[in-house]
Image 1 (tube, one colour):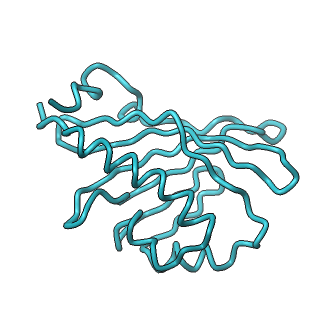
Image 2: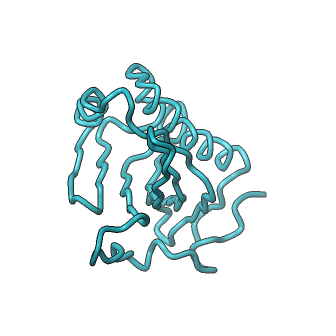
Image 3: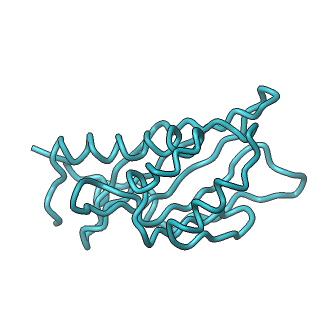
Length: 155
C-alpha cells in the first residue's frame, strides 16, 4: 500500500484544483504553472482534442472568447493507486453566458513538484446536456472510487 497523503497534501491538492477555475477563467497566464506541470496533457473526451504541454494550454486559453464559460470544481474524491499514482476525480459545473449550465467530470493525475501539487494530466468528460444520440464517455475502472483506491488519506 502506498504511503498515505497527509492533511497538508490533501489541502494542497484541493487548492490546486480550485485554482484551475480562477486562473483559467480569469486568463491569468502567469499563474498557469500553479495548476499544471510543464508537460501536462489535457484531453477533452467529447471532442478528442488533446493539449500537450503548458504552451498549448496557454494558446487554447488565448483563443477562448471573453464570454466563455465560468467553471466550478466540486465533489472531489482523491485516490491513491497501488503504484502511488495520485488521482482526483471531480465534478464540474460550467455556467454559460446565457445562464445555462453544463456539467461533467475531471479525471486528474497529480504530482508533487518542488513547490506543491500540480496536475500532470486532465481528462474532461462532458456529461450534460448531451446531443441527440450521444452516449456517455467510457470510464477506465481505475477512476472508479473503491476501497483499494480510497485508502485512509493521512494521519
